[in-house]
Length: 526
Image (tube, rainbow, N blue to C red):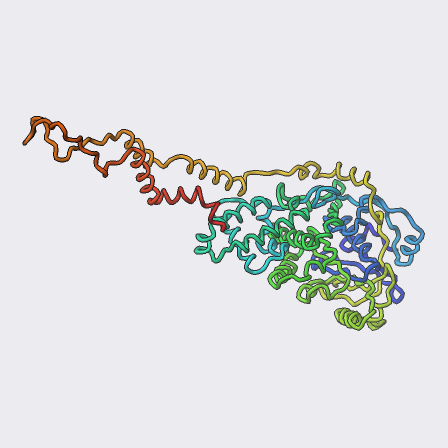
């Protein structure tokens, strides 16, 4: 019989299948070589993810997983003894199921079923933001220009209103920006603004902002040395699958960028379970798939293990699938010719076992049973085996609302992320810039004001045409009948003088700047 508390460097998955009795165990020092949990709906993928998360937690490894159906929250409460579990434990040689709760932290992008999870727009970057909004190549180029303008001017893009403010600035100054960065059209800017509105209606405004999630809070250990299991409530998030996939890819990228190199540690620093992994790759552009492949290949050296959960291995590109060394394959159903081909391809990816036919085993295994292949001591794939998955120690299914509220209240991050922060950023900076321009437009230019003052002090002399002055040459007093000389047509009144001065001022550089300040918003967008 196996003592689960004395496995040391191994994580017990199961054993005791119909054609073999050897236990199936994962070497903790190779757990950062990533893995795959696959199988048709209802074959037990979620329970396999649960028992693996429990094992990592007991070994002191923090875990992050997604709860897409709302039925993983029970991990925060101890499991209940069942006869079926007792029989399964006896069959696979498990001495004690060890019913116990896991230390859990609940998270929720919308802040309803857990602590809010936020990231800034700048953290997301133009590539992921373009992915979540499904932008065209031209629109993605405009987003890249927006981020460049943000960097060059010191206008942080933290939330959606910051991005909108910079896009509005780009629309008003598109001629100058197009000459410097490339074509910026009002059509592209308008399309992005509409996509942002759709994104906001889906709840992305609650995710994009501050305080941003700190990676250290996902890598906590409980006082008893067990790793915390961070559960992201994704039931509502699954209604916007592109946002779900983009968030998890952002999280992987943050882990890759922030964690130091550790080589091959005796156990992972963090294990990441990515449920419904096909959503990450459906319709993804080649640049994004290459980024995922790069992260999957290199994040191993950061001590992070990534486990994809999906219905069919074909959902994962071959370049990524080749990085997944530890595999648990539940039943694959072959109802169509295409399904049969997928089943055959899946069987070919395993190291054959002479005791049984792998393709037949993949088709015939029952619920709670799987075909497994774990990495061996030297990192080579182990021989494929039929395995009964061990029973979970924590409760299966959802957690009651009262229990969830209690776990959230006693969480080590309680109060850290619950209140949103709106600090000075691009929206506020550009608003002040517009106000300063408006005040400058209302006040007359200094040169024009000085000329206006001179015009008020100006008194044109009265000039006589053909009249004699007293005491002057040829002089004599004006004779009777002579009319007073008319004022010259060239003389300007004070109002005329100011109008001409203001016209001259508009011709100067400062005058043109004033015109832009007053009329730019009205005419530049047309």
